Image 1: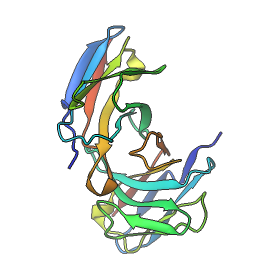
Image 2 (image 1 turned 45 degrees about the vertical axis):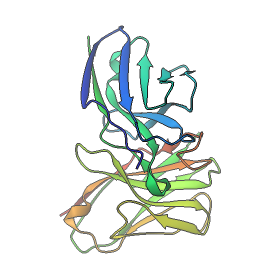
Image 3 (image 1 turned 90 degrees about the vertical axis):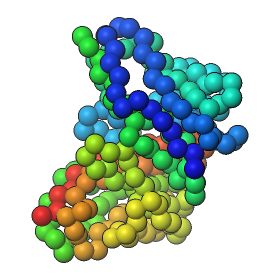
Length: 109
Length: 115
Protein backbone atom coordinates (compact mmCIF):
# COMPACT_ATOMS: atom_id res chain seq x y z
CA UNK A 1 0.00 0.00 0.00
CA UNK A 2 2.31 2.75 -1.31
CA UNK A 3 0.96 5.77 0.54
CA UNK A 4 2.88 8.98 1.15
CA UNK A 5 3.41 11.22 4.17
CA UNK A 6 3.72 14.99 3.78
CA UNK A 7 3.55 17.90 6.26
CA UNK A 8 0.11 19.50 6.29
CA UNK A 9 1.45 23.00 5.74
CA UNK A 10 4.63 24.99 5.15
CA UNK A 11 5.54 28.66 4.81
CA UNK A 12 8.20 30.34 2.76
CA UNK A 13 9.31 33.89 2.14
CA UNK A 14 9.02 35.16 -1.38
CA UNK A 15 12.12 34.66 -3.55
CA UNK A 16 13.61 32.11 -1.15
CA UNK A 17 14.03 28.40 -1.94
CA UNK A 18 11.41 25.95 -0.68
CA UNK A 19 12.01 22.30 0.14
CA UNK A 20 8.84 20.20 0.31
CA UNK A 21 9.47 16.75 1.82
CA UNK A 22 7.65 13.48 1.17
CA UNK A 23 8.12 10.10 2.82
CA UNK A 24 7.19 6.95 0.92
CA UNK A 25 8.82 4.10 2.81
CA UNK A 26 6.73 1.38 1.09
CA UNK A 27 7.57 2.40 -2.46
CA UNK A 28 8.21 -0.45 -4.86
CA UNK A 29 11.26 -0.62 -7.07
CA UNK A 30 9.49 0.32 -10.28
CA UNK A 31 7.16 3.09 -9.03
CA UNK A 32 7.61 6.62 -10.26
CA UNK A 33 7.34 9.49 -7.76
CA UNK A 34 5.01 12.19 -9.04
CA UNK A 35 4.41 15.73 -7.83
CA UNK A 36 1.36 17.77 -8.71
CA UNK A 37 0.15 21.07 -7.37
CA UNK A 38 -3.30 22.59 -7.09
CA UNK A 39 -3.84 26.33 -7.08
CA UNK A 40 -7.00 27.64 -5.43
CA UNK A 41 -10.15 26.82 -7.41
CA UNK A 42 -8.21 25.02 -10.15
CA UNK A 43 -7.55 21.45 -11.19
CA UNK A 44 -4.25 19.78 -10.27
CA UNK A 45 -1.25 20.65 -12.40
CA UNK A 46 1.68 18.36 -13.15
CA UNK A 47 4.97 19.57 -11.65
CA UNK A 48 7.60 16.85 -12.02
CA UNK A 49 8.23 13.11 -11.71
CA UNK A 50 11.22 10.82 -11.24
CA UNK A 51 12.29 7.24 -10.68
CA UNK A 52 15.78 7.10 -9.19
CA UNK A 53 17.87 10.08 -10.26
CA UNK A 54 17.35 13.71 -9.37
CA UNK A 55 15.28 15.53 -11.96
CA UNK A 56 15.04 19.15 -13.05
CA UNK A 57 12.56 21.03 -15.20
CA UNK A 58 11.53 24.63 -15.68
CA UNK A 59 9.17 24.52 -12.68
CA UNK A 60 11.14 22.67 -10.01
CA UNK A 61 13.73 20.07 -9.05
CA UNK A 62 13.10 16.66 -7.53
CA UNK A 63 15.68 15.14 -5.20
CA UNK A 64 15.19 11.42 -4.58
CA UNK A 65 16.92 9.65 -1.69
CA UNK A 66 19.28 6.85 -2.60
CA UNK A 67 16.99 4.25 -0.96
CA UNK A 68 13.94 5.92 -2.62
CA UNK A 69 12.06 6.02 0.68
CA UNK A 70 11.78 9.80 0.56
CA UNK A 71 11.95 12.66 -1.90
CA UNK A 72 12.02 16.46 -1.83
CA UNK A 73 10.46 18.90 -4.24
CA UNK A 74 12.57 22.03 -4.55
CA UNK A 75 11.21 25.36 -5.73
CA UNK A 76 14.32 27.44 -6.28
CA UNK A 77 12.75 30.88 -5.78
CA UNK A 78 9.24 30.90 -4.40
CA UNK A 79 6.83 33.42 -5.87
CA UNK A 80 3.33 34.34 -4.75
CA UNK A 81 2.03 32.31 -7.68
CA UNK A 82 3.56 29.17 -6.14
CA UNK A 83 1.11 29.27 -3.22
CA UNK A 84 -0.78 26.00 -3.67
CA UNK A 85 -1.33 22.51 -2.30
CA UNK A 86 1.50 20.21 -3.39
CA UNK A 87 0.81 16.49 -3.71
CA UNK A 88 3.44 13.75 -3.69
CA UNK A 89 1.88 10.72 -5.38
CA UNK A 90 2.73 7.09 -5.92
CA UNK A 91 0.86 4.17 -7.38
CA UNK A 92 -1.42 2.63 -4.77
CA UNK A 93 -2.62 -0.96 -4.48
CA UNK A 94 -4.80 -1.89 -7.42
CA UNK A 95 -2.84 0.52 -9.62
CA UNK A 96 -4.71 3.56 -8.32
CA UNK A 97 -3.24 7.05 -8.18
CA UNK A 98 -3.50 8.10 -4.51
CA UNK A 99 -3.48 11.88 -3.92
CA UNK A 100 -3.57 12.17 -0.14
CA UNK A 101 -4.08 15.61 1.44
CA UNK A 102 -0.80 17.20 0.33
CA UNK A 103 1.17 20.15 1.72
CA UNK A 104 -0.39 23.59 1.67
CA UNK A 105 2.37 26.09 0.82
CA UNK A 106 1.97 29.70 1.91
CA UNK A 107 4.33 32.24 0.34
CA UNK A 108 4.91 35.36 2.43
CA UNK A 109 5.59 38.60 0.54
CA UNK B 1 -5.05 24.03 -27.49
CA UNK B 2 -8.13 22.96 -25.48
CA UNK B 3 -6.69 20.02 -23.46
CA UNK B 4 -9.34 18.59 -21.11
CA UNK B 5 -12.72 20.33 -21.22
CA UNK B 6 -15.37 19.81 -18.56
CA UNK B 7 -18.97 20.98 -18.72
CA UNK B 8 -20.84 22.38 -16.93
CA UNK B 9 -18.60 24.41 -14.58
CA UNK B 10 -21.34 24.73 -11.95
CA UNK B 11 -24.55 22.80 -11.31
CA UNK B 12 -27.18 22.67 -8.60
CA UNK B 13 -29.41 19.61 -8.38
CA UNK B 14 -32.21 18.41 -6.17
CA UNK B 15 -31.96 15.09 -4.36
CA UNK B 16 -33.04 12.26 -6.65
CA UNK B 17 -32.34 14.07 -9.92
CA UNK B 18 -29.96 12.58 -12.45
CA UNK B 19 -27.38 14.32 -14.60
CA UNK B 20 -24.32 13.76 -16.73
CA UNK B 21 -21.00 15.55 -16.29
CA UNK B 22 -19.21 15.86 -19.60
CA UNK B 23 -15.48 15.45 -20.18
CA UNK B 24 -13.70 15.72 -23.52
CA UNK B 25 -10.01 15.71 -24.44
CA UNK B 26 -8.35 16.52 -27.75
CA UNK B 27 -4.93 14.95 -27.10
CA UNK B 28 -5.80 11.43 -28.27
CA UNK B 29 -5.09 10.09 -24.79
CA UNK B 30 -6.11 6.51 -24.03
CA UNK B 31 -6.31 6.86 -20.25
CA UNK B 32 -9.06 8.98 -18.67
CA UNK B 33 -10.19 9.31 -15.06
CA UNK B 34 -12.85 10.94 -12.92
CA UNK B 35 -12.02 12.22 -9.42
CA UNK B 36 -14.03 13.94 -6.75
CA UNK B 37 -12.63 16.41 -4.22
CA UNK B 38 -14.45 17.20 -1.00
CA UNK B 39 -13.55 20.32 1.03
CA UNK B 40 -10.09 20.11 2.60
CA UNK B 41 -9.44 16.71 1.07
CA UNK B 42 -7.31 15.29 -1.69
CA UNK B 43 -8.75 13.86 -4.88
CA UNK B 44 -10.37 10.42 -4.81
CA UNK B 45 -10.69 8.26 -7.91
CA UNK B 46 -14.27 7.41 -8.95
CA UNK B 47 -13.90 5.57 -12.28
CA UNK B 48 -11.27 5.33 -14.95
CA UNK B 49 -10.88 4.06 -18.50
CA UNK B 50 -7.85 2.63 -20.29
CA UNK B 51 -9.37 3.06 -23.74
CA UNK B 52 -12.61 3.16 -25.70
CA UNK B 53 -15.01 0.49 -24.47
CA UNK B 54 -13.02 -0.27 -21.29
CA UNK B 55 -13.86 1.17 -17.88
CA UNK B 56 -13.17 0.18 -14.28
CA UNK B 57 -13.99 1.28 -10.76
CA UNK B 58 -11.82 3.42 -8.57
CA UNK B 59 -11.91 4.08 -4.84
CA UNK B 60 -15.43 5.61 -4.59
CA UNK B 61 -17.60 4.34 -7.50
CA UNK B 62 -20.99 3.94 -5.79
CA UNK B 63 -23.73 6.15 -7.24
CA UNK B 64 -21.85 6.86 -10.47
CA UNK B 65 -21.79 5.29 -13.92
CA UNK B 66 -19.38 5.83 -16.80
CA UNK B 67 -19.01 4.74 -20.39
CA UNK B 68 -16.31 5.30 -23.03
CA UNK B 69 -17.68 5.04 -26.54
CA UNK B 70 -14.96 7.22 -28.10
CA UNK B 71 -11.36 8.07 -27.25
CA UNK B 72 -12.26 11.74 -26.79
CA UNK B 73 -15.24 11.57 -24.41
CA UNK B 74 -15.69 10.14 -20.92
CA UNK B 75 -19.03 11.21 -19.36
CA UNK B 76 -19.85 10.64 -15.67
CA UNK B 77 -23.48 9.95 -14.78
CA UNK B 78 -25.11 10.50 -11.42
CA UNK B 79 -28.07 8.14 -11.35
CA UNK B 80 -30.00 9.56 -8.38
CA UNK B 81 -28.23 12.53 -6.81
CA UNK B 82 -27.67 12.56 -3.05
CA UNK B 83 -26.38 15.39 -0.82
CA UNK B 84 -23.26 13.27 -0.12
CA UNK B 85 -22.32 13.73 -3.78
CA UNK B 86 -21.90 17.47 -3.33
CA UNK B 87 -18.29 17.93 -4.40
CA UNK B 88 -15.94 19.25 -7.05
CA UNK B 89 -15.44 16.77 -9.88
CA UNK B 90 -12.27 16.64 -11.96
CA UNK B 91 -11.65 14.77 -15.18
CA UNK B 92 -8.11 13.88 -16.24
CA UNK B 93 -6.43 12.26 -19.21
CA UNK B 94 -3.00 10.86 -19.97
CA UNK B 95 -1.26 8.96 -22.74
CA UNK B 96 -0.35 6.13 -20.37
CA UNK B 97 -1.59 5.16 -16.87
CA UNK B 98 -1.00 8.05 -14.44
CA UNK B 99 1.44 6.04 -12.34
CA UNK B 100 3.72 5.64 -15.37
CA UNK B 101 6.18 8.22 -16.65
CA UNK B 102 3.49 10.31 -18.33
CA UNK B 103 1.74 13.27 -16.67
CA UNK B 104 -2.01 13.60 -16.26
CA UNK B 105 -3.82 16.62 -17.67
CA UNK B 106 -6.73 17.88 -15.60
CA UNK B 107 -9.82 19.87 -16.47
CA UNK B 108 -10.94 22.91 -14.49
CA UNK B 109 -13.58 20.95 -12.61
CA UNK B 110 -17.36 20.89 -12.19
CA UNK B 111 -18.69 22.26 -8.90
CA UNK B 112 -21.81 20.28 -8.04
CA UNK B 113 -24.26 21.01 -5.20
CA UNK B 114 -27.05 18.63 -4.27
CA UNK B 115 -29.87 20.14 -2.24
